[in-house]
Image (tube, rainbow, N blue to C red; front, side):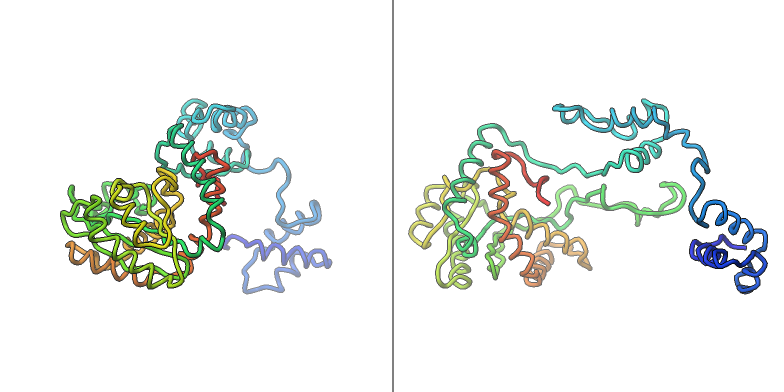
Amino acid sequence: MAKMSIADKMRIQTLREQGFGAKAITAMYPAKNWSVQTVHSICRRVDQRGSAVERKIGSGRPKTARSDDNIAQVFDLICSQENQPGTSKSTRQIAAEIGISARSVRRIAKVDLKLTAFKRMPAQVINAATKAKRLERSQQLLKRLTVKDSKILFFTDEKLFYVDPPVNSQNDRVWATGRKCDVDERRLLVERAKFSPSVMVSAGVCYGGRGRLHFVEEKAKINAQYYINKLLPKLVEDCDALLEEGFIFQQDGAPAHSARLAQEWLQQHTPDYINKDEWPPNSPDLNPLDYHVWGAMLERYKSFTPKPKTKAELTAVLQQIWDELPQEPINKAITAFRKRLQACVAANGGHFEHKLC
C-alpha cells in the first residue's frame, strides 16, 4: 500500500469522530486498498490525541545535531558581532568548528533561529570625500528638482556590451545525476573568448519614452571632441522629439561629459541641464539606465537565441532588444529617482541600494 496522504488521514479522522470503526471505514473506500490495521492505528491516534496528523511531542528522530548547545554556537558564529561587520563565519566554517554537517548548520539557522539568507551585493568603494559630495549634491538635487521636474529629466549614459558576456556561475547552475565529471561538457562548460568582441552604445530615457540607441564607432575614443560632435547632438535631438515642451539633460561625471567643451555645448544647446558640479560622483545607483535599463537589456540578451557571433550581429540584436523594451518598468525606475536621492541622503552619501525594499 502506498503512503497514506494527509487528506486521507483527515478523512479517516472525520469518520472516526462520527463514530465509525476501522473495519467500517476500510469498507467505505475499497479502491483505496487500505489495510484495517493501518486504519485502526489512525483511529487510535485520533482517540488519544484528537488528531490524525499531529505527531506526539518528542516523537520522531532525536535532534542530535540541532541540540541547544549547537544552536547557541551557530547563533554566535553565523551573525557578525555587534559593530563588527564581516566577523560572521560561513556555514562550512561553522560546521567544521562545531563538528556537525553544513546542512545541519543551515537547518539550525533557518528552522531554529528563524534567519534568512541574503546574497552579498557587489559595490564600488566610496571613500569619505566621495560620500560627502554624494550627500551634498543629492540634497541639492532634491531641493532643485520637484516631482514634476523628474518627469522631464532625460537620463543618458554609455554602456559596453560583449558578444560573450561574463557568466554568473552563482546563478547559472546545471542539475544532473552522478558526478560532475560525468556531465556532458556541452552542458557544463561555457566558452568565452579572452577578448570578446564588444559594442559601445549611448542612449537616453525619460518618463514616457526613450531615445534612439546610438552606436559608438569602432575603435573610437570617447573624448570631449567626439562626445560633442557625434553623440550629444543626437541625444539632444531625442530630447526635442520626446519632450517638446522642455527638458533637463542629465549625464554622469565621465571625463568627456565634465570637460569644459561639453559643458559649454550643453549650456548653448539645451534649455536646462545638470552641470558637472551638481551630479553626485560615483553614482550609478542614481541613474535609471544603470540601475534598471542596462540590466534589463542584458537579461534579455542572455535568453536571446541564436546568440550573435560578430559585432554586426550584436549590433542588430541590441537594437532589437532596445526597440522591444517595455516602457512601464522604465517609468517606474525614473519615478524612483527622488526616492533614491532621499535614500542616499539618509545613508550620508554611502551605499543605500541594500536598504531599498
